[in-house]
Length: 120
Image (cartoon, rainbow, N blue to C red):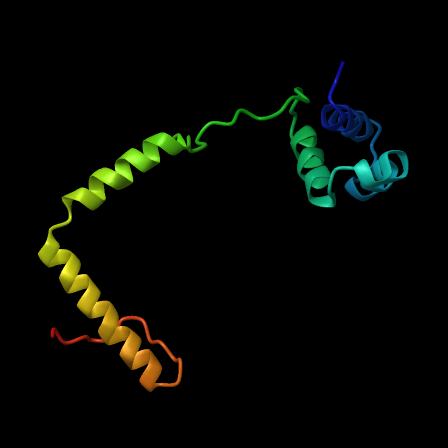
């Protein structure tokens, strides 16, 4: 059995073969599926694909998607990076932050990224 989206794509394919326009196709799908209808943009994109000769109504492959690391892997990596920061580097970053906060306060809350900050 086709998913609801695949069913609508099959109907788009059918309507293109009948010579309907993209707008007519969208209007007919909206009439049949109501709130569950694909968006206008999706209908027009699929309409174009079928007009260009696409045969398959299935989803496109998901190549290029970024795989996310597990929470534990992210925690381990963050811990490792934090442990690699020297005390001098941490102290320097804290001093730079203090200077920026003071400037922000002195300007009434306006913070300007990229200020040239002198070292303390």
